Amino acid sequence: MKTRKPPHLSSLIYRGLFCALAVGMVLLNPAFAEENSPVSLERFEFEQPQMGVKFKLLFYAIDEKTANFAANAAFAQIAALDQKLSDYNPQSELNRLSRTAGRGEKVAVSDDLWQVLVAAEQISQQSAGAFDVTVGPAVRLWRRARRSQKMPSVERLEQARQAIGYRFIELDPERQEVELTQPGMQLDLGAIAKGYAADRALQVLKEHGIGRAMVDASGDLALGTPPPGQPGWRIGIAPLAADAPPSRYYELSHCGVATSGDAWQFVELEGKRYSHIVDPHTALGLTERSSVTIIAKNGMLADSLASAVSVLGLQRGLELVDSIPDAAAVIVIDDEGKTVTHASKRMACFKAVEN
Image 1 (cartoon, rainbow, N blue to C red):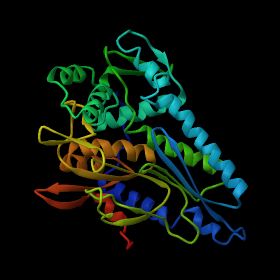
Image 2: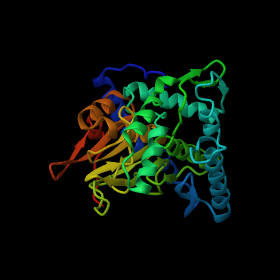
Image 3: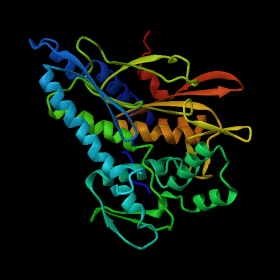
Image 4: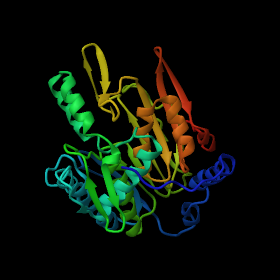
C-alpha cells in the first residue's frame, strides 16, 4: 500500500529551507513570545499504559485543574485510537478490516485509520517496501519465536511472506474505502500508530491551551513549544547497547522524534541474534545491529521512517532520509565490533549540546 509524493525541490534549495525550519524549532516559536507573559506556568507529568506501552505527558500549565483536565483528554484520545489501530485487540477496527482480506470487500474506514494507511502507503512507496504495514503475519511468527525460543519453520515463513505486500492494499480516496486483496493478510501498525497517537495527543493538549508539551510514546516523541526559558526539549540519541548512555543530545521543538533498534527486543536462535524488526521482503527478523533515530515534521513520519531505515541499512537508509523533506537521521551501527555513528545531510542543521 502506498501514497502521494512530496513536492519536488532541489536538494540545495530544500536544505536551506529545512535548516530554516530547524532554526525555527529553536528560535522562531511561540515560546519566546510567551516569556514576557505575567502568567506563571507549572510543570506537570502524567503517565499511563496505552497501546501496549507507557505513554508519558510532560507539559507546563497554569494550574493543576487545567493540567488534569488536559491530560485526561489526551489519554482518552490515545485510548480511542487504540480501539481503531490495535493489532492486539480482536475487535479493533484494524483487525476487523484484516479479517476481510481476500474476500473482495471494500470497507469504509474511520478518518484516523485512513490517515495512517495513506501515510503508510507513501512511506512504503518511497522505501520500496522496506516499510510495509502488511507485515503482520511475519511479526506474529517472530513474537511466537521469542516466546518459544524456536525458529519459525521455513514453511510458515514462506506462507507469511506470500501474504505480505503493500500493493495488496487498495485505497479508494473518493469513498475512503479500503480493500485487502490477498488472502491471509494481517495489518500491523506497530511502526506508525504510536507516532500518530503522540501527534494527536499533542494536538489535544494544544486545544486545551497547553503548547509547551512533549508526548512520549515509549520513545516515539511529539514535541511542542519548549519549556519556559529553554530553547528546546533536550533529547538524547539512543545508543546501540541497552545499558549505554545517549551518544549525543539535541534541543528540539515542534517536531517528531523516533528511534528504532533491537537493544531491548530481540531473540537469539541457533546462534544468531534476530531483531523484533522484520524485513517485509524476507519475513525474517533483522540480524544487522543498528539504532536509528529520526527527526521529522511529526511523530508519525519519524516513527515510520525509523523502521524503514532500519530495514534498508546504512547507505540506502541515509539515501531515503535525504530524499524526504522535513527529515534527518542519526544511525548508530556495529561495524566489526566497533560502534560507529553516521548522520544524514540535514543533521548539520542541528547542533549537538552537552548533557
